[in-house]
Image (cartoon, rainbow, N blue to C red; front, side, top):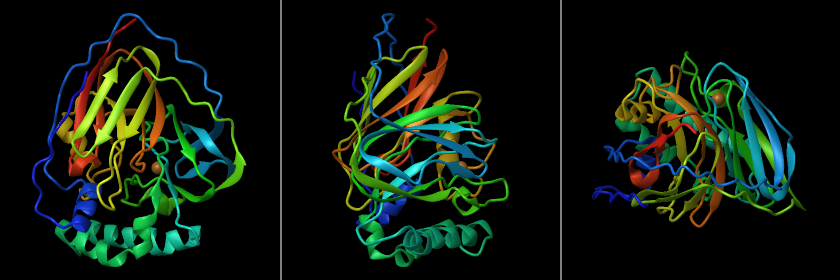
Amino acid sequence: MNLNLNPGDIMTTPRTLQLIAFLGLVPLMILLAAVQTPAAAQDVAASAVSVVEVEAEDYAFRMPGEIPSGWTTFELANRGDEHHFMLIARLPDGMAYDDYVTDVVMPFNERWYDLRDGRIDSDDVMPLLTEDLPEWFWNVEFMGGPGYLAPGLSGTATMNLEPGTYIVECYMRTADGEMHSMEGMLDPLIVTDEPSIEEIPAANMRVELSEAGMSVDGYLEQGTNTFEVHWMDHPDGTFGHDVHIMRLEDSTPEEVVEWLNFLNTDALAEPAPGTFVGGINMMPAGSTGYFTADLEPGQYLLVSVYTGAMGVLTEVTVEGS
Ligand SMILES: [Cu+2]
């Protein structure tokens, strides 16, 4: 089964579009569709990829600083009292962790403070950030990592990583409006030339992300589900697509997307509009990545915030077994 959306025309420059896509500014098109859950459950093969265990606390990652290259599963356990995620990015050759902190994280943080404290309007953020960020920022490769995870939950993301210098980051926000990255959730990660075992997980749900929207094919079941995610395209210079799964509680889909909009001052901070149970962050076009999520029976949203400069939502049902 495929579910697709066509983006509307957007009057903007490519660079502005990148930031709009990243910040979730454009009016959102929403698609709701039920996915049938076949009764028969297919075994999910055990994976033999290199596994990196990561603990997220309020506010730090506990993880190794150096890992082998190749297919790698990050097992993120959220030990904190707030939602966390783990975005992984490969820096351009010659750039170091300190460059990313100084030239990327600090400008984002300053503009966030400007917005939070009312010195600038949300309309000012994009043009100012475009001026602030260095040219090399557009060559940073966002390489996935586990998506939003509620307190007490664990999830995995599996990606094929080239050797290089990476950063890991969570930029959720505290109740005081501080980005988690500024509170300690920003670390260097070296991926070495040493290869890991290259065997990839088997999936029961396939997700394709493109500027045209999100399509899903497969089934979900009670228990552990493995999602195989394909990045079909990458609009010029953008931050790329992501996808997360959230258990629907009292919130509307519109409220969920509002909460994910970087430019809303109460976005990305507790209370979250529901329980995020897994996902995978942005990756380049042509990439394949995997994530797992443990699902109980209920209604869920698959959310791709940055897809096609739109928030895209797909509602899915998990039946009891
Ligand atoms: Cu965090």
